Length: 137
Image (cartoon, rainbow, N blue to C red; front, side, top):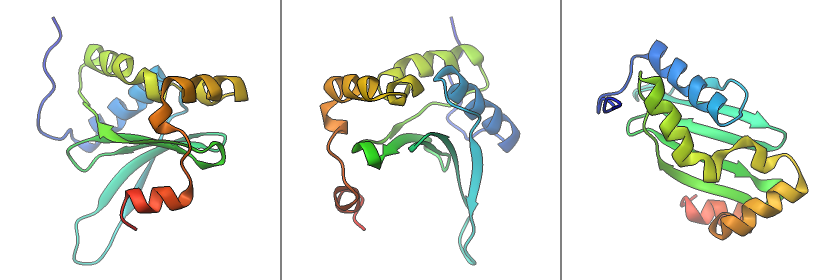
């Protein structure tokens, strides 16, 4: 039986490795770590991986969250909870749970995107205006 993930955030090195393994299991290129710094505020870190015009994003300010946007195709998967762990078995299980929304192969062709939209109608018909309204911007 797999160990339970720690409720505490992972150290940066382990976090990077866990995000890279999760992305690989879902078929994405190795994600890039991005950091937003603002004087007087804690750093905000996230990871991005792109396949064409589709961007996978993992936010790591605990709690961990994962989301996806492909505006040219009017697809958006709103952020949802994500479990990161040192344990590869748990990462593989998390990838299995998330593959309905985040498998890179969903976004490779018009036919695969059409199948994705049919399976996930709530993730279809997104525009920039709808995204701004959804996130209150």
